[in-house]
Length: 219
Image (cartoon, rainbow, N blue to C red):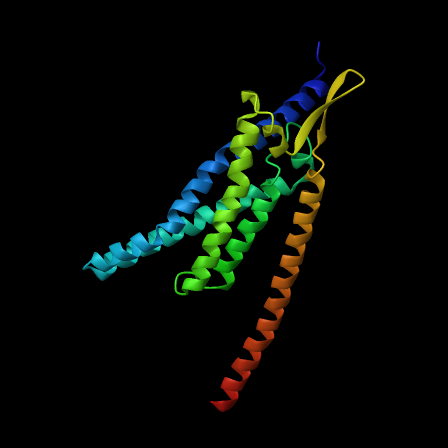
């Protein structure tokens, strides 16, 4: 008979595994919606030009922008789960390039935050490339690694962060050789990116304050 502590531990571990698997399974859907809304921008602009009511055009554009950006943020927030070593390097594993996909998605969000993809074509092209690369890095290992693992594909196990080896007659799960370098390298690049953004914020803050002071002095 299971004790109370054993039952609680089993339920907690099982619930955590179920949550991670659910997030990993639902993210391809969010990726599809995110990419669809991002690349639908030219169609939305053409549709806005056909509207004769200014208020209707403003409502349509605002609804599109809010939905598109909200999906991008939600996908990014859920993708951060792949940066946790206890999740990425434990259990059944995840797509081996999932952390790198999170990194590219963060860069795409920074292009939106620091640039202006809606008015500058070069920024829109850069964000489009980053989103496309990030989606491929996540969806391909998810489908051909995790989802197709039971189809007998010999190469599918290379797309998952964990693999099974036999030691002393017992099957145990161990990280792929490239899993840990990918994870820690991604975390390092995210830290560097965050540091550069923070430095840029401080420099821009000083510039803005100096510009405001000069404007007030001239006035």
